[in-house]
Image 1 (cartoon, rainbow, N blue to C red):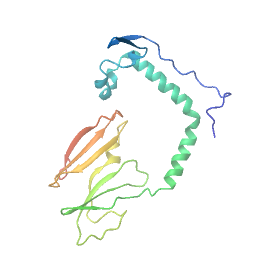
Image 2: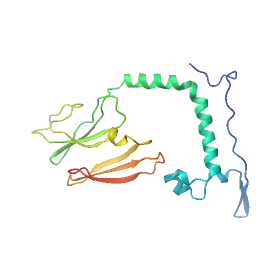
Image 3: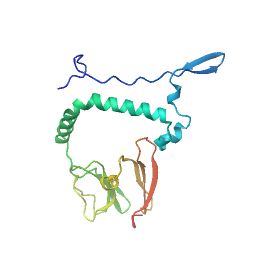
Image 4: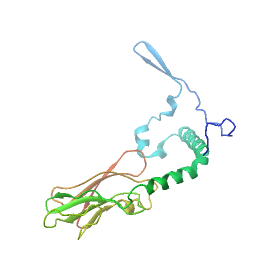
Length: 192
């Protein structure tokens, strides 16, 4: 195993943020923040569109990321081994217990080697006899996370819910990693 605390290990020097004192008088006191420049004036907009950040802030964050990547590079094999070990201990083909709602069972399942959940429904059968982990007869895939994630550099599903009349599916999606989710509504029948 790689010991990151070993003083003999050569590491890149981390980037040091430049000090640019900003004075902020409040209630008869003056607060000094040496790093206020790292908070862009339009930080809220930049959470949704990172390209709006000032060039100096972007350069510093890129340097921080490069340093972290270089520092963590020796652990790449360990990370891969941990993921493989954890995957070996879970049932990759798993599903939630189907929840009855009106004429439908709603449930979430995962495919083997999949990264994201698959939201499904199936017509209710006579009685509530279902086998957990198995697709139900006449299953309808409402939202396939793995398919939706294709071609995107980042993909995180938030809340997923169907409408009371079972016609619409609403889901929240973060495509930037900013935890700012966009709400999407899809017609279940047409998929649009």
